[in-house]
Structure formats: structure tokens, C-alpha cells
Amino acid sequence: MPINLLEKTDDELVRLYAQGDHDAFAVLMSKHQDKIYTYIYLLVRNRALAEDLFQDTFIKVITSIKQQRYADNGKFVAWVNRIAHNLVIDHFRREQGENTFTRADYDYDVFNNVKLSDTNVEEEMVQEQLLSNVAKMVDFLPDSQREVVKMRFYEDLSFKEIADKTGVSINTALGRMRYALINMRKLAEDNNMVLKI
Image (tube, rainbow, N blue to C red):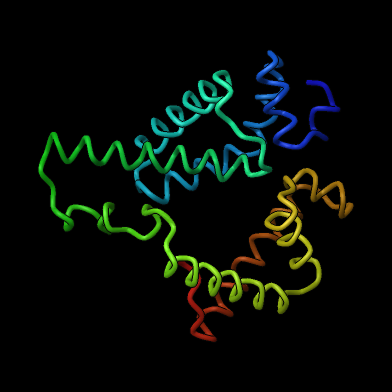
């Protein structure tokens, strides 16, 4: 795989893929597949179903790019998550048509879940509060953990990129992220902060 592809932005990779460069799409996939799979899994809580929906999502992504229906806006992951989100809703709607189920069958009501509805003012306010809480907690982390969290979530770097930038092994970068998340959860509990919508 050409090294220069790893330095491209998501939008540049999408454009290259649309022009027939399949390596560009492989780079996009490797950069974001974990995040997107996790997003789907958190919605459906079922590994086999999450894997099916993940594959369906990328089939739709490929089709949309080939049909030039992706707008360059620097928000590739958000766009893919929106596709995934719609497929999750479609899946549950189909299931509802085939089998009547009650809210008690699921940990949450998928049709009335804030995460699955279009953005509204209340959701935006909750999201802002959540981001504010996370930002406050990041400031309390030890320097090495704070650095990894900021690179991963604010700069959207891979763990390999973080390891290269900080001069440590990938395992060390992963370990720092793990401890950062443990510390942030503890801080949230100690300070009664909400960390999820």
C-alpha cells in the first residue's frame, strides 16, 4: 500500500477511491472500521447483527461514493455513522413488521432512543454538556494519558500515528488510552458527571 495514502485526508481518499484507487478505500477502512463497528454494536448489542450491519454499511458507502453522493465536508466518519444509523433503524422496523415486539425485549426502546432520532435542541444541549464534562476530565489526566486522548479523539489519529508522534510503542499508546478511560470513568463517578446520552 503506498505510504503517501496514509497522509491523505478522508475526503482526498474518497476522491481517489471514486477515481478507481482501491488502496485508498482500504486505507479509509483501516482508519475507521473499529469506530464504526463499535458505533453499530453499541446500538444493537449483538455481535453477529453488528457484523452484518457493518458490512451493509460499507456496501452502501461504496455505492454512494461510486454514485458521487458523498459531499466533501471533512466529516466522513459522521456520514458513515449516519448511514449505519439508518440501516439499524431499517433493520428494527423490518423486525417490527415481521414480529411484534415490546420495549421489554430490548435494553432500550430503539424507536424512541435519543441516539437514533434526528438532532433536536435538547439533544444538542445534552451533547454539549457531555463534551464539556469530557473536556474537564481530560484536563485532570496525567500528561501522557491526556496527550493520547487528545490525539485520538480531537486529532482523529490512529494508535500507530500516536505511537510514532510520542515515540512509544503501539502497546504503550493503547495502555495509556485504557488507563485514561478508567481514570475518566472514576472521575465521572466521583463527581456525578454524566458521560452518555
